[in-house]
Structure formats: structure tokens, C-alpha cells
Length: 427
Image (cartoon, rainbow, N blue to C red):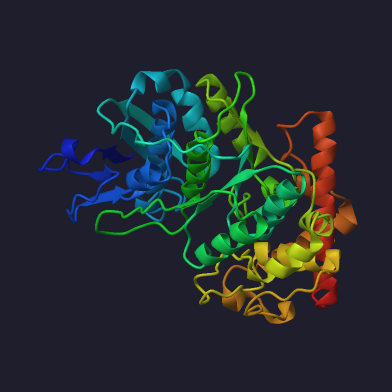
């Protein structure tokens, strides 16, 4: 088991414990053998006039610590080359508050990252920022704005329905400008909180898969929600715009174990986050408006088509966007789902810079994992044996009616990709 300790700089010893990695929370200790995260976040929170509660701030500290641990521990050194055993200690404002739900949190982290987590909560954590002057915002909900198509449509639809969202973004290289442009053009009077985790691991190896980073999005959303005044029993809505096909993360074949996509918005994971918030008495409600829509349906039904077509070329879907010089690869699963959605909706695909591998017939194994072949195989299996042969066992969490809805969105989503592969001559 690999040990990680995340604490304020003042609690980190000069002589570090052997076999343990240390992170300084919210400050840069300027020690090469000590990592850090959130070094600008306190000032960022104060600058925009927020006063988060200790519980929300502790959730943010836990989320950043999880992402830091995920980032710094390599998978290749584990027994199976993937699953790690992570012993994470986090110093909080009120550790006693978190003890009753610790096992539930470990369980949802297991689901999110595929690892075994052992959490320890100690006191002495940094207290939450407190803005001298609290800003009163004319907003009624929070909307996650990643820079992708789904969050773009979500923001457009919310404003079309006369909601007044706060837009929340994680700063990611290549997406930051698009995030700002989207927020400004969709609803210029809305606040847009664009924050960075600034995770810097200690010197040494780091892990590239970083599945745990997604929990930060929900932590930032909870921070933003502290700016909205609500009545007891009326939680702040946090909109998570993601199409149901990608959210489900159904394995393309038996060898993938669902690894073609992260579980960032999987219904089980979101239900786990919501349950933890409820048990902490946080007045927050996750809302997934496109849970039973495909990406193509989401595009076709967007409530402001003119604005969508003005902005959509600058959206980002690719999982390898930075690796290819801020260009979509065109052949990973998110890229194929994106291209299929354009085809389904009839909206011209004018994606900025186009696709590195435009012709899917020649985008095979020589360029990495064969997502095209795996997707084509899944489409053929569905046509021969039906949806159940692909999705069986992946919907055990759902009741009968919800299961039918999930089966429907999965089937329609895969058929959208099938039409793309047929148009490209792959199948």
C-alpha cells in the first residue's frame, strides 16, 4: 500500500517518513521532495467574494487530495499493472464530520479510479477562505462548463429556459479560452468561475491516467454554490450536462473492463456523491438533464441552434487533444461519438483544425489502442445479438424502468456511431 499525506505546510516534517509522499495543501512549500496543490485557490475564492462553509471546504480539500494521490502514484508498479492500494491521509477543519461517511467515500473512489482507497482524516487542516465582502449574485443554479459539446449545449439550454447559472470550469490547457468565450456569449451577466487545481507532485514519476481528477469538478461546483442564497429544503441545482451514452461507460469488449472512458458522470458515481452531500446536510442537488439522450439527440434538440452553430467548432471532445497539438485525433471513442453526433443531427462539422486521423479506415493499431476496431466490433455484435449481449451486467444498479431508459440511450448512441463507421467504410 502506498501512503500519501496531504496537510498544511506547517505540519509537514523536515525529515520525511520513508515510503510516504507529502503534499502541501493550498501553498507551495518550495521543497522539491514535497508536492502541493491549490496554491492560488484561496485568493481566487476571496477575490470573487465567496464564503464557503467548513464542510464544503473540507470536501474540496479531500477532492484535491484524491486527485493529487491519483496523479503521483504510478499504476505500472502495482501487481496487475493497474489497480493500486492507496493509503491517503488528509488534514481537515472538522475530521469528525467525515468519519461516519468515510467507508462510502472509499467505495465511490474505488468505483471512480479502479483502486482500493484507505482514508484517514486528521485535524489541523486549513480553514476556509472568508471574503471580506460577500458578493450577491443574480444566479439561481450552477452549470459545469468544461469546453465540450455537452456542457456547451447544457449552458445554452439553461439560459433558454430563463435560468441564471454560475458557470464553473476547471482550467485545462487548450480549453480555457473556449470556456471563457462560451460563458461570455451564452450569458454575459453570469459569473464564470474558472479555477485550477495546480497539482504539482513531488519530484519523481507521475501517473498519466488521472481518473480521480474529475471529483474536483464537483468540489468546485459546491464552492460556487455557496454564492447562491436558497431557502431550507430548496437545494442549489448543480447541472451536469453529459449525454447518457458516454456517462454509462459500457465496455466495448470483454477485455476493456469499461476502461475506454472515465466514470466521471456515471449514475452510480453521481448517486454516491449525492448521498454523501445529503448525509453532510449540504443543500446541493446534482441534475443530469441529458441522462437519457444521445449526443446526436442533444445537438439536434438544442434550444438555440444559431448560437450552438456559432460556438460548437471551438468545443473539445478528444481525450488526446493536448497530445496531438490541440487537435482532435478523430479516432478515440469521444471523437467518434462527437463525429457521429454531427452526422445524426445534420449540423455541419466544422471542428477547429479538423481531425488528425480523418479517415477511420486507416486509423488502426499503429496509432495506439484500436478504438475504431473495438467500436466496429461492438456495432456488429449489437446487430447480430441485440443490445442485451453488450450491456448485460452493466445495469445492475438500475430499477426496471430506468434500466429500459439506459438500454435505449445506449442502443441509440451505438447506432449513431454505427452510421459514422458505415459512412467511413469501416463496416
